[in-house]
Image (cartoon, rainbow, N blue to C red; front, side, top):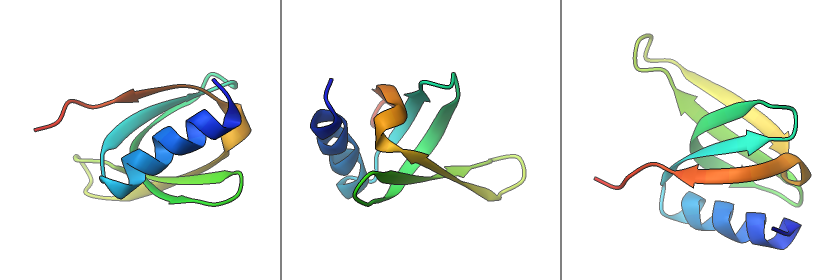
Length: 73
């Protein structure tokens, strides 16, 4: 996929508040809701149900290698 394709997919997830898992070239994977999508920076919030806290993840759009969506309710 291209940079633009990832942007379109993540923007759709952001506008629909869909939970996604994003896999990065570093081997890291983050699950949560896309909060913002700037020029090449993605911000996701991941909710920890055990603690009730939210962890913020920031990563470059160019590091994305795969995206999966959680099932809709």
